[in-house]
Length: 294
Image (tube, rainbow, N blue to C red):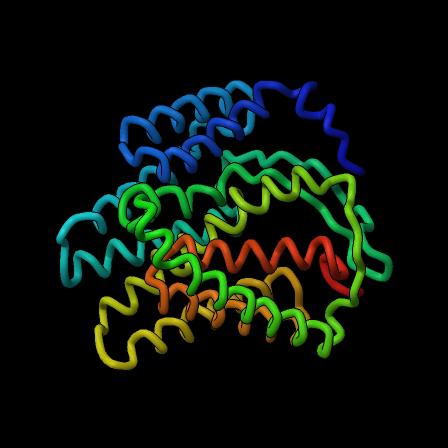
């Protein structure tokens, strides 16, 4: 099943649900206020419920996840903070794995051959996964808002990202995970939007902005930065193993996470790791075998 952009016209309510969710993300960088991102979230819920993308059961998971991140936004310490981290971690993993009932994610493409000799590719607009990033971004992760801070970080983030992506692509070619394959698929526009808001931003907010930062702050030693990067990268690679049981691919996922984590650690900016991750995904999609050689 290939993608038709008319799908969004034929399903306007579902489209509006995801549009409002995207606006909730964007509002965090424009004017980070609970009433604003919360309003977009309520609008998105209303459209999603009407379009049967969700039912009432989803609010159990979202209540616990949002509540845990709210607790982490306070000065809570000790076992209380550890408990909140565990709850946020468990519910986030379950949402990323699509284990919670009540979410009915929107399948746009299934079994499409984007590159020759590649695994078939399926594209979903997932309504569950974005919340693993939205709540920490809204409640606990510092965001860049001033032009001064953006200019200060931009050069370092760009340089580190370019170097990191070069390392990853050279490694992917040498491990025979991909070949060079320049293309502009019909699904490019929706891929760019969906990958940024429903994959890259949630993953970076969860793995780097939440998990890596909490581990680093908990131990707070000379080596806790490196330790947190390695622990999170092992988890990142392990979760990819659940989808692709190929050791070369898992090795690349581990290296990629080390790079994203290092970019985040050196810049102290979630925007930097989002940029690095998204840049890799874009170059991978347009310039190399996608998703991987079969």
